[in-house]
Image 1 (cartoon, rainbow, N blue to C red):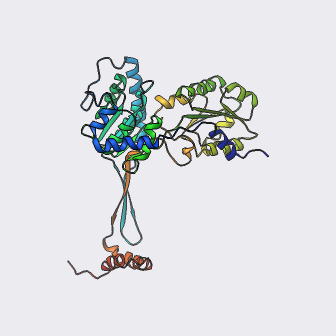
Image 2: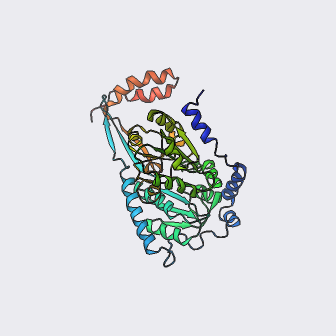
Image 3: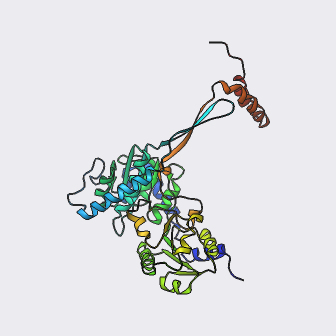
Length: 389
């Protein structure tokens, strides 16, 4: 019996070995930092801040001219896309005569974890800092390796400071604060298993963007797709390191053999391709070829969707304006890529006014049914006739 799309997706996900559990070790680090602050961080880091705390100045020439120009394009595009996601307040007038205003407020302080173990990632600095600024966050900090390119990128994006702290201890310091590092409201950004586990453990104290696992790319290709560029996209995904997952989906066996992905999925129809993709919920999804591209309006579960052979995933990693901090391991079924919502909270503002009597008549019976007599009394008081002013 052939596998269902859900079974095939689960089988492919299972091909990526799970990361080793570091939960107990991370918990020990967090307790240490929470108790001893900078002293604990100093024990685990050769440098704490290292002169890079705000205000900071990157060394001269840290960004070559072409890198600076590229980052400026990325900054402008990411800012434009991020700002488009900020909603204006909306007031709803209800039948009883009162109003509820839905308004968004940014968090006061946020931090971006920018990984830099093997190489510096200034693009991640852009994705985090620019989006936080577009959301209206008052203070934005970056933590990561003390690499000049990273520091310069943070300054270019308008960060308030850069702390040369890495690993789980950086996340703990940001969650609870130390003598040198301020406690923040939200921590975002990818990182090692230790970093992600630390984010998970402090998520009840601060907001986080999610748990970033190994990167993945799924390509759905049909007749008319440019197979050379798609194969390059798939090969490029391997640069993310061990655990990266690539999947090619097509109704044509020759196309699949040309793409050289880790997993090939041959389908009879594009409806079958859609069912598989929705079950897999890939981090990156590329649709190339007329029949594949026609699926775009029907895609619901992907971290970021790239339509057409020209729309390479790498553009999204750097300069397209979309954010490259995306849900992985199938989390695109319920999670979104990094956006202004991660740095903003929606708050309801209620103004009842003369509608109190009508609302009390509706609300008191509900409160009494729940045995909350004092709630009922509170609403009943609004049902009294008021003296004329």
